[in-house]
Every structure is written in structure tokens, then in C-alpha cells.
Length: 129
Image 1 (tube, rainbow, N blue to C red):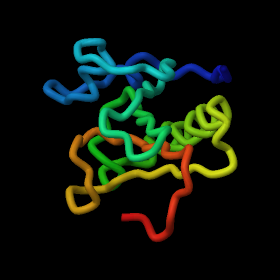
Image 2: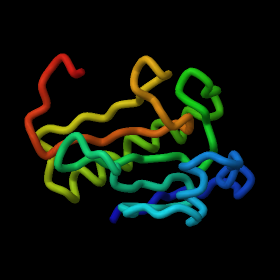
Image 3: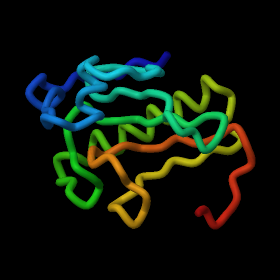
Image 4: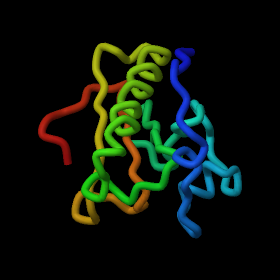
């Protein structure tokens, strides 16, 4: 498993929102099938998978969504993609996978804590949905 070379200050890493399902999962208060964890992100299997691999990569810092992100959040947003690529390599789906941020209710976002979907392990058609 690839290990990040830098460490973020704890004040940035553990900002959580009371009542947020993903914050509870990160704190170990709600169950999940963990795939990866470090000081920046927590990745776990989606409970309603849309592909053989459907993993959610979630920043530990509570960010409501992409449209609410700030320039200070750019590093962790990019980092989510690097972790997705690492998981894809480990699962041997590098020949085709998709990463998706749903933004807002009309896109299908139902948990308002930014998270990246990693989907793969089958042919993915275009356009999606």
C-alpha cells in the first residue's frame, strides 16, 4: 500500500460535523467495510454498489460538497483521486474505472460530506446515468 509522504496537522484532519453519517463512520461510531485509511482520508465499500468495485473515498475533514470547497481543500480533493488510483491498482481494474463527485441533490448526492466514488470492474458506459 502506498503511504503519503506528508502529514497534515490534526486540527485539519479531524474536523467533523455532529450528526454526519460519514463523520460517524470515520470515528468508528457507525459500521463500514474499510478499504483504506490514513490521516487525511477514509475509504470504504459503498453499501449500494453500482459496480463490482464501488468504493467511497472520504476526506476526514468535513466538507459539505465540491461547491462548498475552498482553495485550502484542493490538496485533499486531489489526494482522494490518488487514493482512488491506488485502490484501482490493488484491485487490478486499471484498464477502466471511473471517479465521480456527485454535487447536490439533483446529481444523486444524498450524504452531504464530500466523497469520491471509485467505480470499476465492469464496462462503464457513456453517458452515465
